[in-house]
Picture 1 (tube, rainbow, N blue to C red):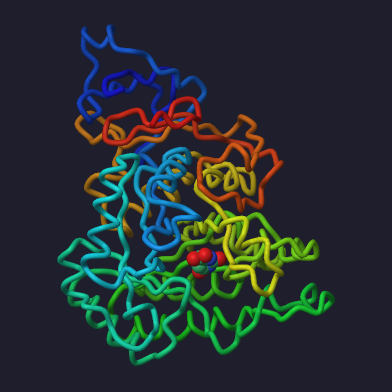
Picture 2: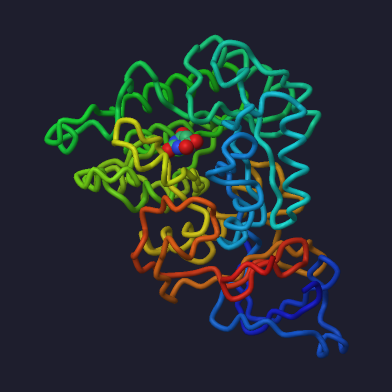
Length: 425
Ligand code: DOR
C-alpha cells in the first residue's frame, strides 16, 4: 500500500509531539488536501508515529550462514521491529572486507525492499586483526561504519592507523571492546555467579581496558569512534568522562544488557550466552543511567541469529548471541521508563546520524520528508513466542515473556510493510 493516511496517532518529533493525521503518498509525507479523504485509513489510535528505527548492529548472516538468517528474513524481522534501516555486521563468510561483498549485501537488501540494508565494512582483512582493509575503496562503495565486530581489534598500532585513515575519509570506526587474551574460553561474566557455577569468566576489565585504550587513541588522532554493545558500569563512566572532555565518541547498549542479568546462566541455557556477556544488576542500573542522561547515544540490537542446531551444543561450544530486532522496542520500554521522545532518539534519530543516513532516516515527521516511519505504543502487552518470530532463527531469551509496548505499523519508503504487527511481504 503506497498511499494512505495514518489516523489517530501522536507524532513524535524533536521539537515536540503533535496529534494529527499523517498522509503518505508516493514515498513522502504530504500535506493533507481534499483528495486525502479518499485514501485508505490505517488506524494509529493510541500510537506514537516517529521516524523509522535504525539499528546500528544487525547480524544478517548472508553470505555464509543462511541456515541462521538471510538478508530477506532479517529484513522482515527488522521491519516487524519498526526498523527502516539496519547496519549489517561484517562477520559474514566471506567477511565484508571487499567491495564486491558489500555490494552484494546492499543490492540484496535493495531487492528484498523491506528496509535499508547498510553494509558495514571490516577494519581488517577477514577480521583477523593483521592487515587493514582498503578503506578508501570501501568508503567509495558507500560504507560508512567499519568494525571487526565479533572481534576487538587487538593491536593498538593497527587501530591507530585505522583511525587515521577513517579520520581522513570521514568514516567511523565501531569497536567491539574485548581484550581477547582475557576472555579465552569464557562463557559468562566473571563474578560471584560464575565462580559458584565453576564456569570460566569474561571479566569486565576485558571490555574496559580496550575502551580505555581506544578513548586515548581517539584523543591522539582526533578521529571519531563508536563503541558497540557496552556492558559494564565502568564503561559507562569512562564514556561519560570522555564526552565531558569533548572527544568525538558515541556509544550503544543492547536491549538484552538492559534487561537480563548474568544469574540467568544458572539455567545453563545457551540462549543466555552472549558476547559481551550478561552482567550484574549494578551494571544494568549503570547502563540505564547512561541511556537516561545521554551518555549512551543509541540502543542497538546486536541481533545475532543462530540455528537451534548451533545453540543446542553445550555452553562452552555454543556460539554467543541472541535475537533482538523483533523485540527491541518492547524490551527497552519494559526495562525502563523513557519518554517517547527519548525512545525515538535512541532507536532512530541518533543511530541515523551515527550511520550517516540522516538525510533520509531519523527525519522529522513533517510534510516533504521521505516516509520511513514506525508506528508504536508503550502500553499494549506483547507475549513473545519464538514460534511467531519471522527471523529464521529462534534464539530469543524472551520466549513466553510479556513485554509492554509494541510496533504496530512500519512504513518503508512510503510503503506499508508491516500492518498491525504483521509483515505484508
Ligand atoms: O553475542 C554476540 N554474537 N556478540 C558478538 O559480538 C557477535 C555476535 C554473533 O555474530 O553471533
